[in-house]
Structures are given as C-alpha cells and as structure tokens.
Amino acid sequence: MQLNQVKALVTGGVSGLGLATVKYILDNGGQAVMLDVNDEAGAAAEAETGARYIKTDVTSEEKVIESVRQASGIMGGLNAAVNCAGIIGAGRVLGREAPMPLSLFSTTININLVGSFNVAKAAADRMQHNEPGEDGEKGVIINTASVAAYEGQIGQAAYSASKAGLVGMTLPMARELSRFGIRVMTIAPGIFWTPMVDGMPEHIQESLSASIPFPSRLGQPEEFAELAGNILQSSYMNGTTIRLDGAVRLAAK
Image (cartoon, rainbow, N blue to C red):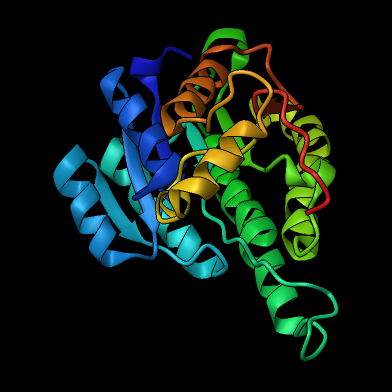
C-alpha cells in the first residue's frame, strides 16, 4: 500500500520507536492513532502530532477490541497495526537475594508477547473485512522484537523469551492470515536511542555505541520508522523478521 493510504494503530505510540513511526506515517500523508497507557505522554504526543491517543492496556482483550474499534472509527478504517508496546523486564533467574519472582517473568511475557498477539488478532479481525487493494492486500501487521531474541544477555531471560516468541509467531501467523490478504512482519532492533538510554551516563552511551560495528552509533527511532514504512509499502515482505542493528551481536553481559 502507499503511505498516504495507511490507517494505522501504533501501540507504545506516545514515545520512542512508536512515536517515531506515528510521525513518519503522518509526514507521508497517512493516518495514525496512538495506543498507550501513559496519559501525560499521550497528551503531549497528541499536541505534537495531531494524532489521537487512546489509553489502552494491551493485555486486556476487551479494551484492545474496543480501542481497535475506536481507532477504525477515527480514521475511517484500519489497514495497519504496528506493535511497539513493551517493557524491559530485566532480572536474573537467580538474583543475589532470591530467585526471580515468577510475576516478573509472566508480566514481561504478558505485555511483550501476549499483548502483541492480542492487538494483532483484534486488528486482523477488523482488516479481514477491508476491500482488497493491490495484490489483494487488506492489511499489514508489524511486531517489534529485539536482537535479544537471538543473543540475549545475562539478566534478559524474560525479555529474550518474550521477543523470541514474537519471532517464532511471525511465520505461522503470516501463513494463516495470507488467505485474508494480511501480511505479518517483525522488526528486531538492536541498540536504539530511547528515553531509557538518554538517561544513562555519557560514558555508558559511548560504550554502547562502540560495541556496534558499523555505523558505530546507536540506532535512531526514525530509522526504525523508515523500515516500518518500507514494510507497509512492499507487499512482497511477509512472514519474516528483519534485524536492524548495525551488525551488533550482544555479548553475554
């Protein structure tokens, strides 16, 4: 589809990779609605972009269905869903004081993996009724994994498991939804400049940049957004995960 035809909901859309994606879609003539849980950041993002914000807990089946319905009503349809909502969920399996609480592991899986599936299925249910476009396409779903899905570091057992689940879900979901003309893709970002990184000491930022072969710098959210835009436009991209990482391979710690 052309970017000026895009009607997208973006989870985690009020900051970081999600907000950059919203801006990219809007700058290219498309429409976007932001789904997130941070009301303060949502209000600021609405003022900055002009896009609508809907408070949405991606782990709630009922709320997601309602938010998808609202987003579709706001834009006059829905043909794209970009899942950027997620948490780090850092913690060692065996910590200094005690083993990792099971609640930390399950919460990370529930938000990052189950939440993305929840949004994807609700969006696909809406997209299947769209009029087919070029190549019979009715919609596109883009999930956000991480290079930690492939080489997770110590302390990332929960996070890596959640992101590896997204990678594993991509092909079977794309195969199933192909009969409806819906594509499914996943982006696995490397080390990107996010609000979390922005708050780190300068020497830590420099160390992170030095670990990336080329270009030896942190990824910019706009680069993620551009790749998402390319996926939306390229109907032959389907059923796979694209690493966007400057050739970085995470060390054990």
